[in-house]
Length: 327
Image 1: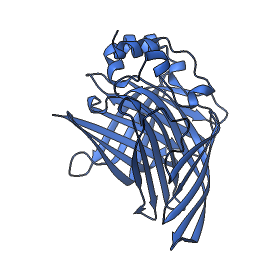
Image 2 (image 1 turned 60 degrees about the vertical axis):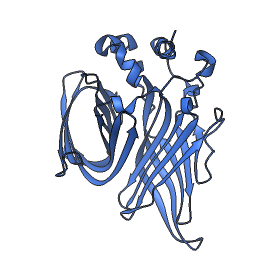
Image 3 (image 1 turned 90 degrees about the vertical axis):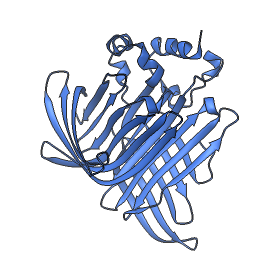
Image 4 (image 1 turned 30 degrees about the vertical axis):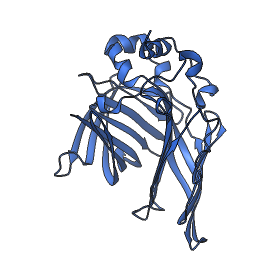
């Protein structure tokens, strides 16, 4: 049996997620090695508009290639303070502290994390606490139903296990000069995180929209993908004092710059399982271009800090837009 087929079997028989799933997954015990295109990642963001601080970070493990990638997008007063590092890994790491500048700490599984970053210009110490419980759509929708709907070929491109969570970010940002902190800002903002693991062949994904829109009393979180001529889509609306609303259908209309691909705004029409519709609009206030090149093409990601409006309310968050071109 090939590695891909072995991994497909693991996906099909997955059970409910536990606190153990917060940590790194070592497939060597079950498969004998890591599947091709294996990717495990932890993603965090917060948007503090009053302080003009925008933060996105992603730690990803590519154990089939024996390496890890760390990405930090840090925008302060419209100035880009981003950081990237690629680390060679000879074996599965036992924690997230394998970079001198950027460190991750799981304070309480499925509830609380801490991220620290320091270089010659800034020192950032952020605690992210869940404001709504962790959400895993796979535990709401039967995996067999997903396979019947989209087909097993989907597993060979995007067999991702994942969960998401809306967060409250608190902490401090220090601006440094000649090694000394000359200004400190208290951070308090809404944020978001997700954790995913499994197979992801980026260039085979034709496009997607991923959104985490934070409002005072709710979070709207969804993804719509285009691959293999199909359009998997799912999402959830978390609201204080209410049951989660499961998003079943997502319609997207995006306006771009003259290049035809850099987004400036989007309108999303969301339909839940009961047939109720809501319109969410986004306006980009900062966009970071992240190209991923491979031997067979290029995947272009636009990580957009956006202002969202819905039902007369205003919020903020991330609207991630992806398109792929194959040779």
